[in-house]
Length: 246
Figure 1 (cartoon, rainbow, N blue to C red):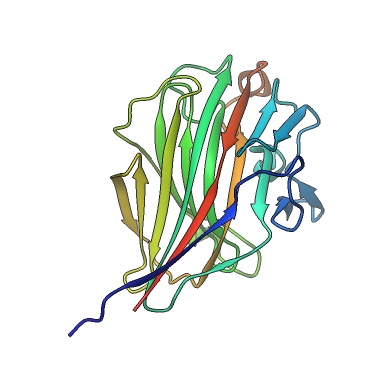
Figure 2 (cartoon, helix red, strand yellow; figure 1 turned 180 degrees about the vertical axis):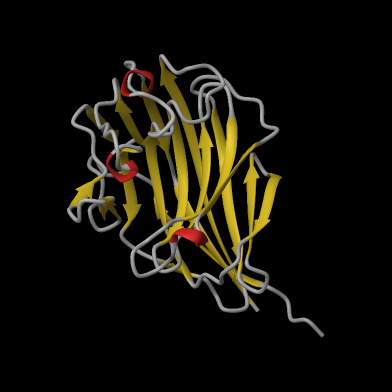
């Protein structure tokens, strides 16, 4: 007989304080191809919080690089200070509302300017993103190349456009669930299952994140094609976490 799933749920951040809580959130940083640590932070960023959500505007984006995606793609990104453990025989769900409005975005280009809800694990390189532009909502499942963690041949990325109508600034409720027994991820948008996938490695915990990106291929597009005055506003909140155990 299979035991019933017991769920423990709590609010990680409801953004009621006038400043972003440094005990809960930090600017994401990572080692670049040059061996230096780079912060995912744009000098044009404007941040507002305290009314139940975090609002981030970067207009226009200024954080660009010609060869290293880690110095180019994320314009500003926050990661949770806490790493949320996945119950060994259960599931972990991260849920948040996000609204995105882009400025001077190339229509229907997934990577020109977008906002994200992130769930990622630097111990395996596994990344799940729910992303939105002015006109499209999509899911990303990726395994990063990380020194000492993954090899180049283990990298992959899948982007799947979801059947979710949207418009500039429209808020959607996003929930990303990882199920440990099957190594499967589910993306729910506005309470409906929109996509699921299976990843090749088990994950024991995740950090959550929220970010604004511009990530057109550095090898395919010139600097002028990638940096053309686009920007974005994103808002997130509140963040809720649920762990299901048997």
